[in-house]
Amino acid sequence: MYLRLFKRLLFETDKRLLWKLAWNMGVKGVLSIERHKQRLKRGQVFPPFLYVSVINSCNLRCQGCWVDVSAKMEAMPPETFHPFLREAKAMGNVFFGIVGGEPFMHPRLFELLEPHPDCYFQVFTNGHFITEEKAKKLRRLGNVTPLISVEGNEIVSDQRRGRANVFSKTMEGIKNCLKHKVFTGVCTSVCQTNFDDIIQEKWLDRLIDMGVMYAWFHIYRPMGPDACTDLCLSPEQQLAVRKFVVEMRTRKPIVIIDAYHDGEGQALCPAATGMTHHINPWGGIEPCPIIQFTRESIRPDDADPRSLRDRFLKSAFLQDFRDLARTTTRGCIVLERPDLLKELVEKHGAKDATVRGKAIEELEAMTGRSSQYNPDNEIPEQNWLYRLAKRFWFNDFGAYGAFENGIKTQPQAISP
Image 1 (cartoon, helix red, strand yellow):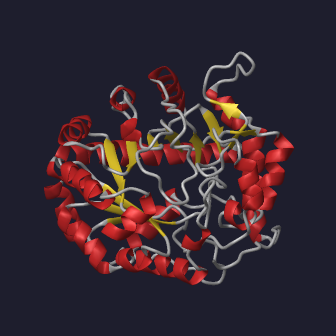
Image 2 (cartoon, one colour; image 1 turned 180 degrees about the vertical axis):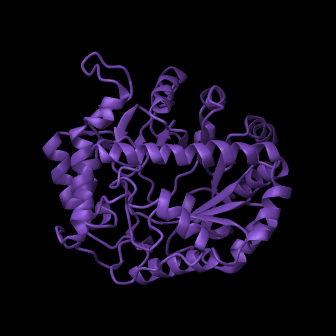
């Protein structure tokens, strides 16, 4: 498997892009994590990985979407993006997830990315706007990887994403990237309607045959004004996804990402551990993309003259969120205990960052349900390389010490 993966990387990807990945994301990414670990020893949390929503608009209308995609377009200007990135780089950060909305609808997307060849960008996209010309630009930049979402077959994709011919347009975007040897990934929000089609070896084999280099399976989370809770997976199905990912990592020459388990198979929340937080299109700093409440902003503010560093390190809202999340569950507090999250938001007077202004009402309407935390059913990594990498560079970094000592509230989880 390792030899086949190495051959794929060597012969199916532009060598310059492979070097950018190895250096910017690999070597410099590891150094970023090491700086994060040193900060943690001093009781300081500045996330080494940051996700930035550069736009709220999107051409699709996906079930369970929490973004105000049909509201007036808010596209983060370079004048906001560049100072933020420079301050983050000064803290050692090199990896940034670019999300939306649909990032390729941003009229100045390449103006945001081009001035930062020393970083690595992962762009979450539906692929519909990746023309051959844009694929050529991605190859020329070298430090941008598109992560293109596929939500099922032709019928399911149209249903899940609220438009016609979604699957074919997405596949066209993938093909344009692969034609120009761009390092490309495919992700899926696994739910009831695509579970049987996507959690299959033949789906991974199809991606490998196409030239896709990595895949990401994440669990559907019922959020937003139309949460579509009937799409949620049962705890048994979530466990099946985890088993599938672990097994396929030992057999398939494709990188498979997951962001919610350590090498021993224990669940974790990247926001609770301080690994990552989210910036919305207006510049608001949020615990994660699905928690649309904010107290601080990356934008210059006369009322808050603190540096970006201090806005993270000295944010009482973010600190209290991390403390609450890590002492409540190893899973997702938004899903398991939305009532506690609501209390936290009200305690800090956190601003509703949505255009619709209904985030607190949506939180009130949520019912506790299961997330990735499934105690006594942990599935450790079988692939030694993944297990080793997670041991040093992706784990909870001791964040759940209090949780493991029994200081927790039992999640009020239900099956869908």
